[in-house]
Image 1 (spheres, rainbow, N blue to C red):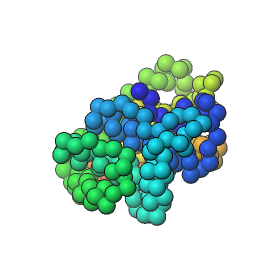
Image 2 (cartoon, rainbow, N blue to C red):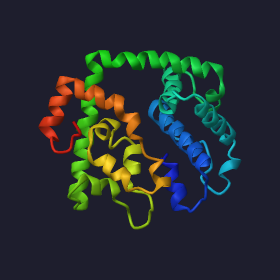
Image 3 (cartoon, one colour):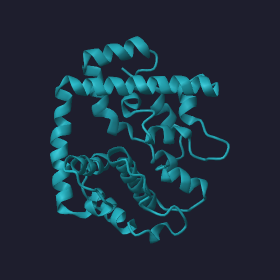
Image 4 (cartoon, rainbow, N blue to C red):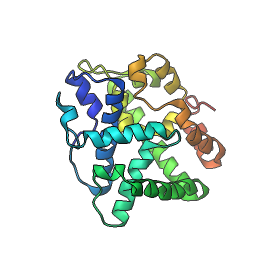
Length: 234
């Protein structure tokens, strides 16, 4: 199942404004989390010109507006928190969860766990695994496509799609936020993107905490310097 709805919408020529694109991205994140945690593969919205007639559209739209009012709310973690606790409690998480008071409580409880992770070794191991996986992926892709630089890889587009392929690779986790946070090629790639496309990619400022953790952690710092010294931004 492909939960990268933005790419599908662009390929089908469906016209959406900025807010509608953001609502679709939330639906995409929700269905990706459902596949990850519940192993359920469903589309929460209809990927067609009748997109806004989907029964869950109003729910995702309301959640998007709520997220805009809360400046420090991380939508990725908010959605993940719902599925995390649903799995813990052996319950089924559905889109309507996003509009409840309990969803906020679940989010804050999840943040307490999340924010405690950098203090233990297991979090560093997760970051290391993410970096290793991302490095293998980009190296293999560069060899496969005959591309010589990472900036070119980030910018690579297929003949049929207007969106850089790296959008999908980042969305599905093949290129992790850990790698983006310490890559000097990623900001260069962003600078040359069209404004409407750029807004769909992770922002540099949202990667600063991850970068700081990697830079200050001796094992992660040494790994990056040993393996991708010419690519790191520190």
